[in-house]
Image (tube, rainbow, N blue to C red; front, side, top):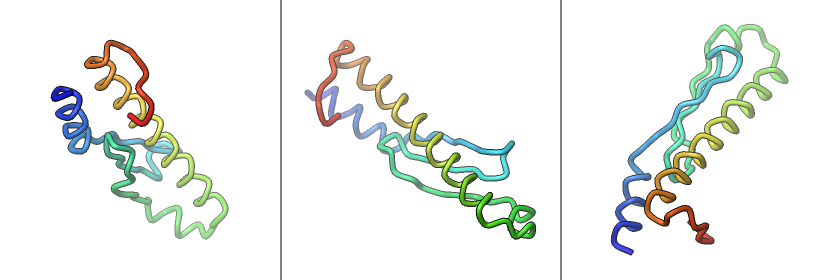
Length: 88
């Protein structure tokens, strides 16, 4: 239990980065699946294609969340021996 709590605390301090469209939109997500930041290349805003920008943001956020989920699964799997514990 102690190792599991430590791993969860560690996940709060770890981050993953994800991008869409070659880095035009980038996100940073914590190991606990919290969106920490979004960066948007100004050239996309200048293009004034709001629909495309929204799609790029969604893609980058989803990729960040996927990476965060994999990180969490990896870290907690080391402790739980691969047993899936609901809520973790």
